[in-house]
Length: 79
Image (cartoon, rainbow, N blue to C red):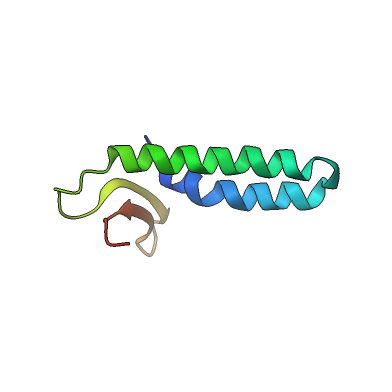
């Protein structure tokens, strides 16, 4: 499960860059990257428990330890 939210965010960005770079396969690439994104969203939805409070499926990585900056993502169910 590690990295699933990051994958959900980064996949469309990578897909957009590849689609703009290779015009011949734009439709196929768009379909593939949309399917990957939809699959990640479905997996996150299946593992989310609405009865729990707080963040779920949390990803936390130290980014700049000298100043205490972190990369933190989680699902909270509000949106």
